[in-house]
Image: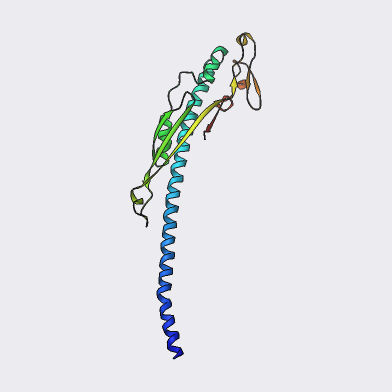
Length: 196
């Protein structure tokens, strides 16, 4: 009689085992869906960051080129450092970088020295146990700013043999317009970074 009771008890454990295993599998699929969504969201944020930085870097390079053209006229430098220069908006670079990251972007300048970019991934999160993910795209946004690192010299600087350019960071520049080796690079004139 004891043996029959043991047999019946073990028979009751099997449905509980199946229920627990089924629950664990459902939980594993849910975690997988969350992981898929997080990976897609991270891809969107990477695309947004890269696109915003690309637009800002292109504008920085244009400003640096304008500064080189006007290197003999220090009176024009402050306008260039402030972003008041003839540059072409660089949203095309944001669109290019978003496309390279399998996304599409909307881009807009923020003032004279920045860009805000919003992207949406081309691919969806994918099918999962959570309904609706097969048609859901990830979105993200980023803002990049161009920070001038140098101050224009005062009046009368153009009359000096060497013009001193004072910059934040490691050095001041004694510029000889006839000697390109004394001239700073774009990264010495402007810093580009993501804004919070």
